[in-house]
Image (cartoon, rainbow, N blue to C red; front, side):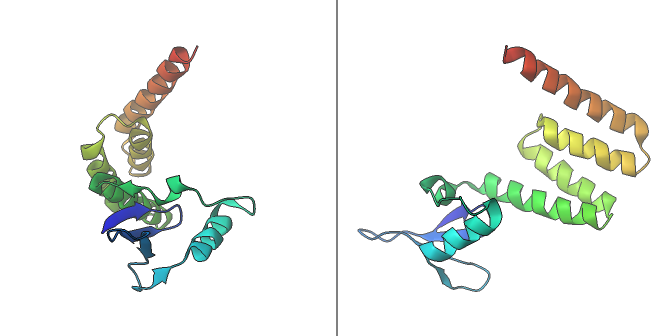
Length: 138
């Protein structure tokens, strides 16, 4: 059994010797056909989306946890639960400490919590990283 972070949801890929992999929706235990995967992808990316091998690639545990944290953080931000969202960001930064996008999100959360000095520092880090990326692309 392997983890797959399909664009619309988490899947479990079951690989048996000498057989094509099968995909299971872990939330209901049902097998997921390629046709259903294609339909989910079209619903997510639009009518021209095509199911590709990259959509069904196996991922490691940190990737799965990172995606769960991002989803949880997003939901908490919508609910204005900033302190809990900050915990998600702090956990995500233990996996990738210098991630400028996660640090930008943390800056936004600190801003919402009226911690403006820390927020400004995080926003500045994000801007600096974007400028370095642009300069290296030239």
